[in-house]
Image (cartoon, rainbow, N blue to C red; front, side, top):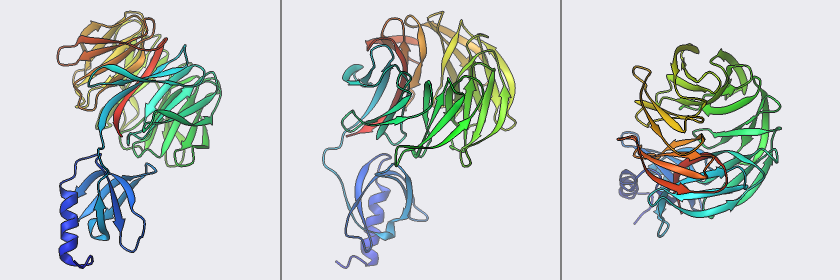
Length: 375
């Protein structure tokens, strides 16, 4: 068959119509001699445009008519995994969420504190406060492949939606380090408020919000310029931040004030303050945006907030000393919480708000992250 024929390209386009998100395949472009590995995101049937992640994690868009051949790697298995940062023993526990079994333990740097998986599932980034660095884990083999020096006392890491940048809050020097994931080099340092803790990107990746624990503010960073464009007063001792899926509101835990501040992101004004349990730290919002879950460190509990009314509608017990580690599986059917004082992770069914499993991990689990990993 003539590979430049209309029939051939119609056939190629039909292949993209049948793909599932995150499916891996190789493609050969017109005029190229070497195939390219991609992870499929979406196909626009009206334009024939394909959106995918490249091997370097960057988002690429191309026409199906520009592809001359496709191939599928054999026996690719995808699993939803949770990576847990164990602060006191310098390890990462890897949990398969389908079985709730620890399938791997990774030795990392001194005092791992924050952890985040790239949206494309290929890398996990861990801040090691004792080394002033960020360790990079290749999820294909769960090996540390790089170590990046950042500022003094890194606390939290966040990966932007396109997996091209990692932001790191440096608690002791009031700054944020910006890492280029292609080179694993720090390309910018941004001064923020006093004692930065949690850092989170808006769903579209255009802004990053940083909770500054010592001056009760949230710094707003324009990610295209890496400039702080706003500073928002919140409650006492802000810790971590979560956005609703539509990006219209940000919820901030205030450790000292025992509250959650609700920010309207169109105005960057606090529009509500919600009283929760004692010393709230971590926060996660359901994938459908209807509820926010908050870990209360001193109460050994999780508060559940209805995001329509901003009222606490439930509180349930977990393990001793829940930390910032709280995250949903992508389908929203399970919630995982790290319990720092008893070296466990609680697994919650959010339909019933009941703990359905408890997993033993490393020593003093602080943070955890969840994502889909294909191997």
